[in-house]
Each structure stands twice: as C-alpha cells, then as structure tokens.
Image 1: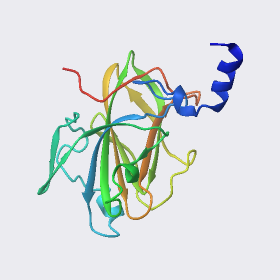
Image 2 (image 1 turned 30 degrees about the vertical axis):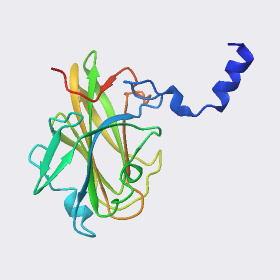
Image 3 (image 1 turned 180 degrees about the horizontal axis):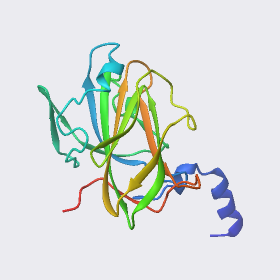
Image 4 (image 1 turned 60 degrees about the vertical axis):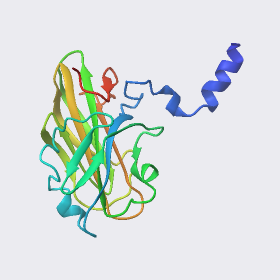
Length: 202
C-alpha cells in the first residue's frame, strides 16, 4: 500500500477502526459486551428501579452469549454486542421497545497485574449503575442525555490481577437509551492494556 494512500485512509476512516477486538479503544472505552435487554419497568420509575436488583445475581451474573436469564416471570437472553461507537446504543439494538425499560451489559475484564488508583467513568441515558466484581461502584439516578465527557467518576478503583466482572446497568424512561464505561489511570490517561472478553473463563 502506498504511503500517501495509507495517510488518506487514516484521515477518513472513523475512530472506531482504532478499537482493537478484545481491547478498550484508544480512549479507554469498552466496546465488547454481553447485553441483556429489554426489561419493562413502570413508567417514570427510573430513579427507584436503578436502586433495585431485578434479579438476585445482578451484581455479578454468570453471563454468556446465548445464556438465559430469568427476571420475574420473563426470560431474556444474553447477546454478544460490539459497539461501533464509544457507547452502547440499546435503542438501536431494541428499536421496538426502548422506553421505560432496563438493560444490563457485562464484560469480563482481564488485567495482567493488579491496577490500583484507577478512576471508573460511567455515562448513561438515563439512569445508570456500575458493579465491579459484585460491588456497586457508581450510580446516577436522574434523567439525562449522554455526553462524552460528562461522566460520573468513581476514584480509587482497583482491578485485580486476572478476570474482573464488570456490569453496566442502564434504565431509560424515554427517547435515547445509551451507556458507556471506561477506566483511567492515576495520571488521567485512559487504561487500554486490558483484555475484554464476552465469555467467562472455564
């Protein structure tokens, strides 16, 4: 490939090409997920529903592609999704049911060493919550639009060596339905030296 043509491609191709399969993108956003959705909730109940656990192991589900999850009297299926954007767009995934609904997304995040002093960034439209290894890390309980740099931040987060279970929960009341997660290091730089899987080991 000629250098001039390569330079042209680097200019015109979208930033998504820089996100490697199984890795965060260059800004640290996780794009590979297992998604469980949609689950209907009562109208205007997002603030209450984000605080509830709709199923017992919500904080650390045994998610795998094609696996079934019972929620009340409904059964949903975990679906593997790789986002072309820095965020998950649940409305695109479920265009026929995207208002007064909840969704969950799971990623298995592997670190080659323990990483401490990290900041976890959550963005959501509308309400959102993140669990890491079964523990609630951060949540947002109001309605909002998703803006790239207007994230809720949870400092002092540690990724253990090996596999970490990351769970993103997003509730939507109306219009767009989106969510994103990323990690930054103590210096504020994105953490990109992680492996992101959509299947548990073993």
